[in-house]
Image 1: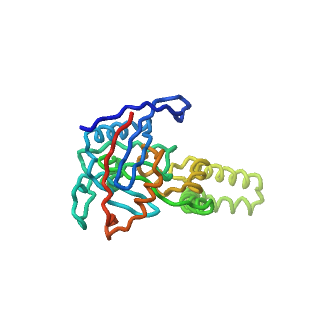
Image 2: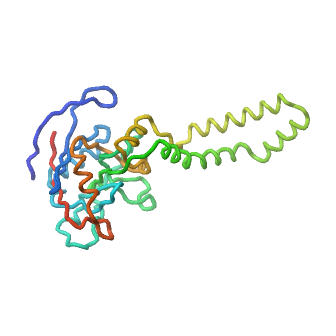
Image 3: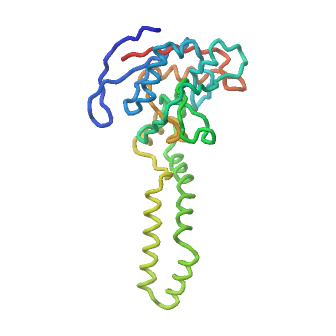
Length: 268
């Protein structure tokens, strides 16, 4: 059992209330990173703290590294794994329910929990025996606009087809031919209003917040993952270590040719 160093650090939480934050340090042979753990993802926070206190992650590797994307480690199968061995299997004994929060996003340095795919894991339970850290890249505002359009256009088209039906089109055609301008405009307004209402409330619609746009166009990140995985912390120091690890040469399985060993310490 490693010694847990106690250090009370205060910060502003999203609600504006001052709370004690939990800090973890991820030490490697390429440097150390520190992460603030979020209090509104308590299942992930507490599970990571428990496993770290037990030394669960110590001696494991950052076994999956993709430049401009992420660095992933912590899997027990990576401990003492010989070169070339395929590693990174999950641990079904260390899963927690998802805590996906819309106000957290995959900016550079986000600390996140991987999980099995939806087809075998429909409830999106996280595998807290591992973690990944976002490296990402810097995007332009135009690229973010394109992402929004690519997601939202099919949604609008689908909703439009549900309300602007052949029957409605025929009715509008008849009203126009009959010179019923008032009835024509009223029906058209109602259809447009229904479409806009459904579109605005659609849960799958993508709209980057000002905070997301600011982060993705400055420090960078990986917006494609937003809303799909639980983010439960953020890097507060050691960004250069993330860059150092992400730049390593890897094999065909994205495992670094140079082992990057992990030790996780909890700082309260």
